[in-house]
Amino acid sequence: MRVIEKTDLLICDEWGYIPFEKEGSQLLFQVISECYERRSVIITTNLEFSKWNGIFYDEKLTSAIIDRLVHHSHLLVYTGPSHRLTHSTMKSQ
Picture 1 (cartoon, rainbow, N blue to C red):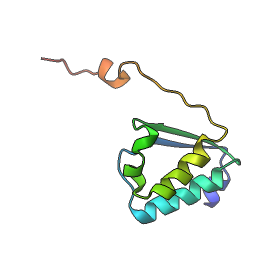
Picture 2: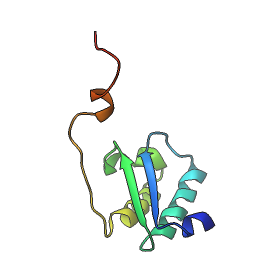
Picture 3: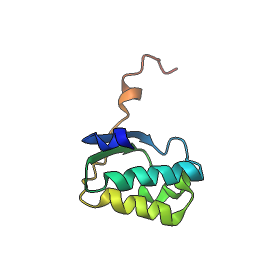
């Protein structure tokens, strides 16, 4: 937490790619709460908010995390083609 307290920006990439266990979810909530209204947070994810219960397994905890993240936030939704697939070196058959 001391390292996070010294940062201006926290970036969490691929949010929800791997679900958290209960303890991990609780620790992440503490991190998000510590950042709330003190520093900037960027989250990248392919999951809409309604599917975040599958990441954290607890509706109240999930709601509390979302509540802190969306307050004072900007939501950017990218609907274009995947950059990785578009620039893949693999050839489709």
